[in-house]
Image (cartoon, rainbow, N blue to C red; front, side, top):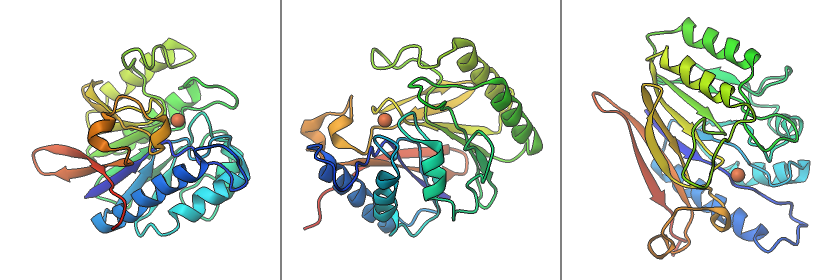
Length: 254
Ligand SMILES: [Fe+2]
């Protein structure tokens, strides 16, 4: 099974006069075209589709990702508005129609996918409240033998100086770590939010953070090497090696 991950596109409305507005659309569009060439089974988006959480930003985001051949699974980031995101993608069967959280499971693939919502309206920091803890423990307990991939916007650990104490309540980040440690079928947790590349041991498994697709916002990437091209990640499930990941830089066509 092959999964593509994109994150933190921070798309702006067509009418925006933000200097990076068009460039962010180009960054995402280039990734979408290259992802189609790799023919993944699924594409996960780890939050911050829109820069201000406005309906017109989701409309534009939706237009840019429309050519994706594989199913796209979205979770919100702190920049997103859950109501607007839900409305823009209400035709996707997995998108919860009601409830406070945009979290869900996908059972269609060799790897079970669990999407976690770490956002709270108007808050920059991450959340993993008691209600979310109960939900995740229940869905992980349902299928303890099934290899599982989690994805969430806010990593529950610090990342150098870029990101320290990222959860509003540190005990909620600790609860996420403790809960996942009790479910060894979790093969990886994929995160966004920090806009820079990290991979590490965590909770008895591995966790990773990928750079933002929006080149103007990314951190921790050697721009001499990447030449300001957008990047995304591919994660391949392989026998014996778990989930093997690579970062792909996308060059402009021609
Ligand atoms: Fe972001």
